[in-house]
Image (cartoon, rainbow, N blue to C red; front, side, top):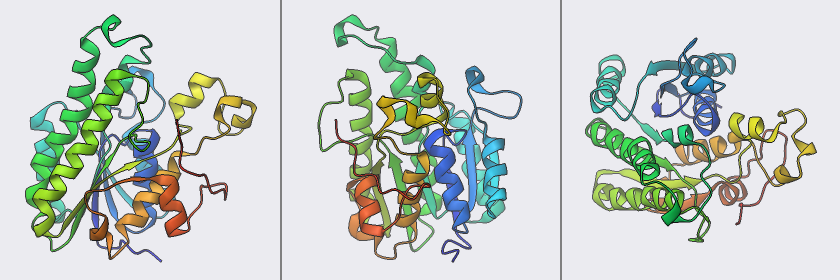
Length: 277
């Protein structure tokens, strides 16, 4: 059953990884999904695999409706324009998935905090934390026109454990706190706000880094406890179709826990427990 028919969703950072999978799963459930990102056909950021156009093709192949909108969420005018386009074309917004995370551009930066350049934080804050905050800023007035709406921030969280990377840890926990603060401000508006943490995902960039593909990832010992991005996509779709989701507002939730609660599996039929550090 397409439980999200007539619902309108926006998934930011939807060119690849979790964003792409979330958009596809929401589309499969019947939602009209707007997909934003910087990568478009023939012009992918840093030649990374995947674009917003590819994501829309995948949504349509799965029987859904997707709309690609090129947007750099570090530029407020572009973010505002996306929301204005949704208002003009649909007249409503029901689901906002804040997934944009431009910090992939800087790669992995090992080392102690005092050894790393401060510019790493500038990138993580501007293209990650602030980009999600700005999307909320422009989207919430449209979301408030509904009797019910849902905002989800994708993050990484393992019961408060330190991730081992200072800037990453700080940025991801800022997103958790952002969702909690908004849940307090919006609880009387019928808008549920929460953050959702996937486990160790086999994204396109992770597979590329490990030198394997989705067909032979089992050859990598490091990926034995990994999951596809569709696992968190199914987690978020389960939340979006839950009529009692308001009971979870303000919480940070893990994909593995939601899989157990909502009885879904990864695309290969496996249940993957919540990832722990």
